[in-house]
Image 1: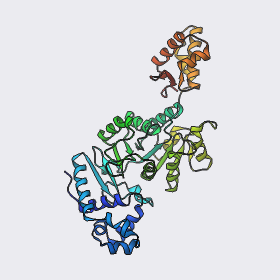
Image 2 (image 1 turned 90 degrees about the vertical axis):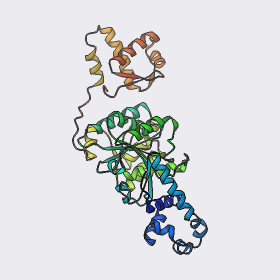
Image 3 (image 1 turned 60 degrees about the vertical axis):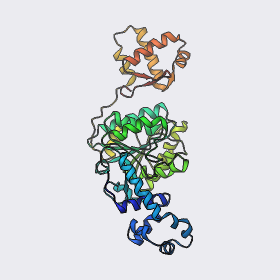
Image 4 (image 1 turned 135 degrees about the vertical axis):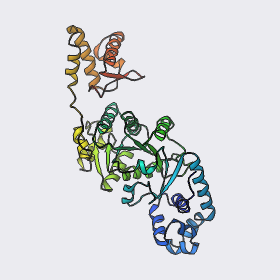
Length: 390
């Protein structure tokens, strides 16, 4: 069980009261000499600092019963493998202290201490839309794979949402990088439910963790995600936007990162693709640097050299691989391969329609390409080029 710490319990109270207004909580602490002093201050002292209206708004929440409740919460967190890290305590991410609105504390769940997870390792946020395209999915994994091959390994940070977030977390786990999920709910509630398995895997994997500044039993509501985004942007020295519409949480996080004087990168996309319009806008506004060459990205992130080798031309690689086949069979395979490359996520029915071939003929070629590692086929029979071959 974690040793009781009075100042931490008081910070826990202040975090609940001033979660959306951390500046006020910090101002009180600076004026009175710490979180414990704030909880011990009289209503008159609080009113003198915050004005007469604070007597009804804040003073009742800064009570002895609130302290007792926080102390019980800390005890329960310790018994469930979680903890609360107050601002300024060991393990609290140092980069957050540079922001104008850092949370007064963070709830944490992981197998290693927060000091080990948030130590000197560089941190890179990978964020974007929930409506991730096949293009975005492939490039998100490509980016994480490239970072995993860097001389200096980074910590991957994202928001555990569907789409880009969970793709980045899964890729980090697959490629051996630590990853942290910043949640918009309490530490006891992984949201959305389809990401529970990934979240639990992160919490139980050394070097990985889940964090949030929301108290336990806090549900998922829209405004909480906006508040969560500042932590993602603040923790990391660099933020990568993979895909985003012009409006969205990823855009807000990227702009926040820029306002915190962090490096921002964006994956360019087609100008007529709504999922790339946000990235393209940030690049036009010189807020984000475009991602083109992955080896260059790794170096610009300050992670040193990487052993990424240039990708072979997809068409040439397919032709070479099947060079021993007769000409007709090789051209059939090549046609399907190039259709899949051009139209990531294309379905079997669409392949039949575009080629005019029977389902059985198309299925046989798709199976061949999948078995030989050139394409992947999901449960809905959507085909995409494998990033390792592309």
